[in-house]
Image (cartoon, rainbow, N blue to C red; front, top):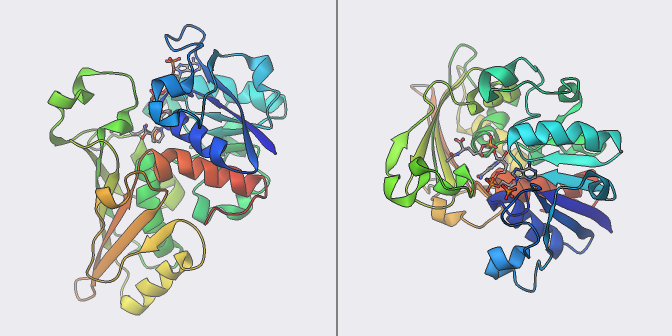
Length: 331
Ligand SMILES: NC(=O)C1=CN([C@@H]2O[C@H](COP(=O)(O)OP(=O)(O)OC[C@H]3O[C@@H](n4cnc5c(N)ncnc54)[C@H](OP(=O)(O)O)[C@@H]3O)[C@@H](O)[C@H]2O)C=CC1
Ligand SMILES: CC(=O)N[C@@H](CCC(=O)OP(=O)(O)O)C(=O)O
């Protein structure tokens, strides 16, 4: 059994990850942690989330580094700055770290102050982190000690764009345009005025400055325009992406590129003419993709839907854990 603890266990992503770990036959949920002063400290996770009664009845303990180092792996479902503080300390004790925050997704440490507003206490960590886009990182994950679990919008976007990029199908001088809508759970469990139900409508935010734009660009090695939107629903992300295509690309090439998802992993192509909906993925660990090509105008529109809390965070973290510990890809 691989012993896995979760820091931030009371949060939206942490609680789901705790459930996924507890339900896996080869993983043992060895502890759940919150901040030392948390209002939820010592409560059972199942008292916060009654759907977990009988599934995860562990208490939420105050953060305890010594106890954490008893685990084989620790998942940090915490704020970016908290993850940046904790990860180096855990790595120094030989614990494998899966960070669900954005603290370790850039190789270049100078991007952190610019997009996250803080400096990493041990910037050298960033060069050793493996970006855990599970379907595209199996080999690198197999011996990683620090895994940066991708952001929710980048997961939806990169699963759609990566096969096009690696096959040279995106126009060299063209810029894919990503318009993505997220449910409100993307903002986490803590209440805030702009994410309270009566305030939420449908609106863009973070225009030309959201931290996920450089995350997508650095992984894709290609510029993009990324515009997130907040929608009045709980769970899910739908990214609709307009891609300028290289000359001469036809449906055969596009179909062949997406063939990388035929055999394993959590990405599924819909039949031609069907488009994904967020309701089709809410609560699921899958990404649904669909595309249409206008070869004359060299434009591809691809739509990608995921659950932000699952494939966009917790279930992707589980995929990374399973690959890292040789427990198979959870296809
Ligand atoms: N929500 C989403 O869709 C996604 C979120 N992420 C990322 O995952 C991380 C977690 O997100 P989410 O679950 O939404 O966040 P939440 O706000 O729902 O949960 C945060 C958790 O961290 C705990 N926490 C806060 N401060 C500390 C601390 N100092 N030490 C230990 N625990 C602490 C909180 O408990 P308490 O405050 O009571 O201590 C809570 O359990 C974030 O970095 C987020 O950006 C990534 C992809 C998608
Ligand atoms: C709706 C909403 O607020 N979404 C969050 C993104 C989700 C998230 O937590 O970001 P990471 O994936 O980088 O960890 C945001 O735009 O900040």
